[in-house]
Image 1: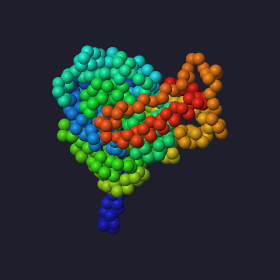
Image 2: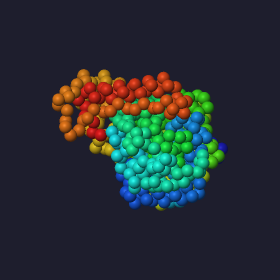
Image 3: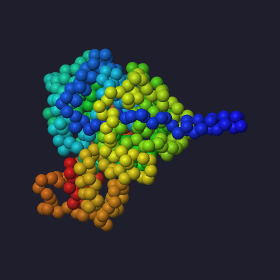
Image 4: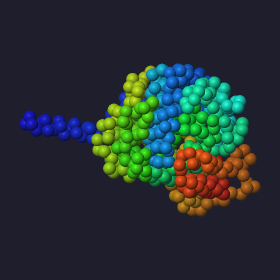
Length: 452
């Protein structure tokens, strides 16, 4: 009898282990950068200055540069940057326990990026000045970094004192809805808004050591938000297909790391689900973490180590005390907009699949697409929505509203230098750009009126 009871305990322990890492006791909430007050930006500036004085800004720049070829152009792009921004946030919280990296939805200002409030003198700062394009405004004004040599953090808009138009939210919404594999979603994101923002800001952001500009962190936090929305929308928390940093992608792969910012052997699987293990954060406009750890793996990495879940304890980097989400963070108890839809049930869980964090614009976008495009087009470009018309409704230019509804601009191409720097396949980059242009052309030829 005692032996049987012992076996039961062992069996229960094994089941518990198989269920994955523990759910975080609380999650800090990453907020839209556009909602931050000048005082909150000032608090971020204070932390960044302290980190820079201790060499952290240059360490992050150096580590990203040294790992560059391993974490771009393959599926590891998403898990690496999720872990990378998390480590930055964890270290920042050792200086201020309330620190949380905000996310910057750059698509909402796609028509005039330089006019975005996030690029103001009280936030991320404006354009650089002088021959060296030194950033003299914002939270990193006149900040000196040391990698690869000592210099002022630089910014150099791609069109002089302005920035060319970026990718419209509707394009990214189509990716979130229609891409059924992470490998495809990664390509579409990396070749579009990811590169557009880096190139538009220029300066530090146009280099391998871009992480020395804090705009890198808020930009990649937004890309991470889009990945989390994609994961929830398709109920694919463990899809990790295509090519990883060292060959075929596997959830048991160690995330590439550099000695200047070590991850202590964290695996890809350890960062796949927000709200579990050491990944104790979520987003204010996204689904909350699932109530229980999702079971199984649904991606192309069936050879993932079955014990990888137990390696989550290795993901705590250099900041054990800041990593559990229990710091004195004023945002830690905030409620994500769609918390009730964060479970791992049917496809999209009722979550409105859109790139925008703005609930009102998201609804207008959804209804506009439903009412303007035919079912066949919606099923191909926006399958997360239901079409209300059997055919596309073509726009009458004479009836265009005067107060809004200007045609969506066609998205910019990545520069040849950027493509070579990342060792992208030029043909795949061009194919992705043509697909984005097709989305824009389809919307512009319909009665759709963009709310952005």
